[in-house]
Image (tube, rainbow, N blue to C red; front, side, top):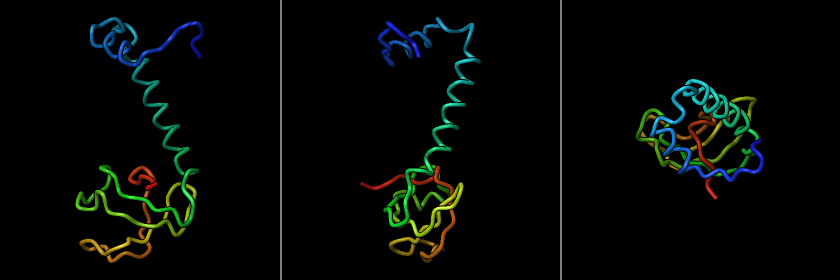
Length: 106
């Protein structure tokens, strides 16, 4: 944790674009990738059976983006969902998918 420093994301991005971090770009990239993996690994813990979710832009086929579903089962790394309405070749029941393609609906 950085102490006695106010971190402003806009200033950091501006500094990166200006080349102020060129000597450590690979370290910054590795840190971002690591943080994304940790965040993704922890995402599974935010889902519960009965939660309403929607497919985000990471889903394939793309026509599922924005489609809503309900979680019926939470596994170790994936969840099983039932679509609220049939879409394309998906008739709605028991679709096993990674949490990375889902967003919780409030």
